[in-house]
Image (cartoon, rainbow, N blue to C red; front, side, top):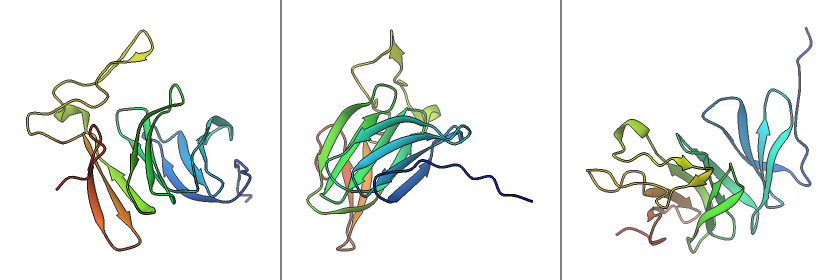
Length: 157
């Protein structure tokens, strides 16, 4: 039997990879600072974005078409993958080696939605319990894990 192989070629090597929630696409981050949304079935790049430095990690926000990219220069960017726009940029102060974001729609009081193709003013709504959906985690080379507030772009205490 022959294995079927598809791929997207970058200008440098890929070092971050995550499946999209639909399992039909993946997000890839490159050493050259390229972030690519890749159609797994057809082998095409659906969207290509340029980051500030090498992308070391990525995470796809469930229920939202938002990708978080962590970079070696200490930046985390939340990207609107529908429009290819930066939603927020957080300076973490150290190279971001890993990150995690969790968003589960059934537990959210006001689910954000598109109106006439535009994201409503609040990207990630509050919940009755407070912060779920408004924070993400980063891990760095100093073995430190930090919880970040998306709206204030500050580390939580």
